[in-house]
Figure 1 (cartoon, helix red, strand yellow):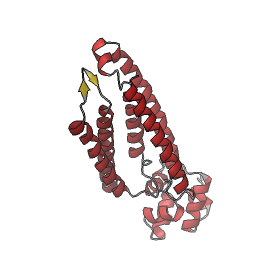
Figure 2 (cartoon, rainbow over the protein chains, first blue to last red):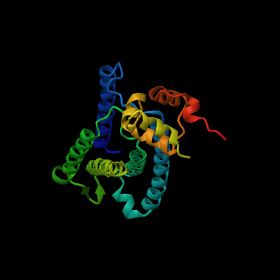
Figure 3 (cartoon, rainbow over the protein chains, first blue to last red):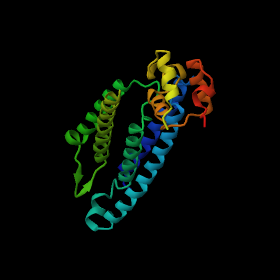
Figure 4 (cartoon, rainbow over the protein chains, first blue to last red):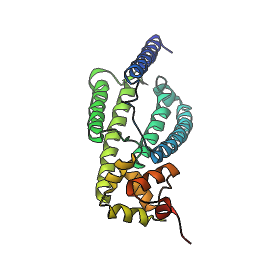
Length: 169
Length: 65
């Protein structure tokens, strides 16, 4: 692992730890915690199960892909991320379409707009400020691109789900 | 199997699915799933629904042969 990768990883873990500590301090009474009903909790459990299966399958595909020399070099920096990304997409998609992604106290419209803005920022970073591929190796900015598309997928799926619900009503 | 009794009791009280969902603290989709028979609610949710609709458990959820 290169020195830059170690610095990025350490900074990410530190930022995540700080975020969790701050959120715990702010949210002592559970006011900002997303609340789900019993059916949603069961559906979310299933979603995590399918997400896990997605990670396993994506891992197998990645192992087969990276056994070929060209792909091994291409994914040498961020190969670990692809299965996680697939797992998250599976988990979120199942949650959305089983009505268990948006909690009882979440404003769906605000959330979808927030997701859309975050996705644009994440897509813009690798496209305009960083190089995606250097010497045939995908760079860490590819993770930003994946996250951008992930948030965009979430926003679009929320929109589709809303349209399906409106039609059912 | 559809639970038409919940739907009928809700309609009799002039409540929408959303109104009932808010009264019992669940999502509208959960009430919809209960009415359509796609989801079997726990006893706690059954009791909450009965209280919100002024009915007994027997009236709404007991299956007569």
